[in-house]
Amino acid sequence: TPEQARAVYDKAAEVLDAARYYAQTTGRRVSIEYALIRDVNDQRWRADLLGARLHRALGPLAHVNLIPLNRVEGNPLSPPSWDDVDTFQELLRDRGVANFVRRRKGDDTLLEPPVKLSTAETVIVLPRLPR
Image 1 (tube, helix red, strand yellow):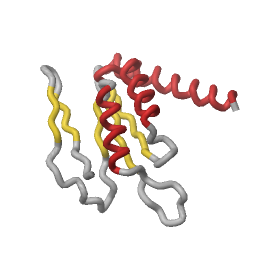
Image 2 (cartoon, one colour):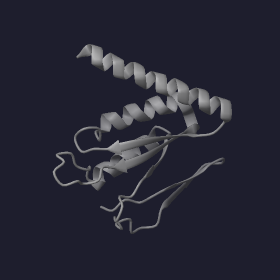
Image 3 (cartoon, helix red, strand yellow):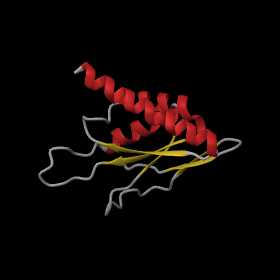
């Protein structure tokens, strides 16, 4: 319902306000845990929206830990493809939001060395995802 959507939006705004206050007060980055679920919240538009809101609220002090959902027998939800995770990660990065993809427990598929991106002030290490 529109009322439920508004309540979620208001709660997200409240959380971002608290995160902004923390970042401005301490000068420390804020880490956001984001569980990626296939066809639920792994779409490109969601990455753009998340990146825009976090960058606007926190600037370089925003950091997202992307966590692909673990497969669980009997659970109808599933993790996104690695291509979708890679795209989500790139879209966040394009919006100026540092991020890292958490490996699933027992998942030894990150075979390539990490990519290092640097600016004059910051070095960000991002994992390479398998194709």
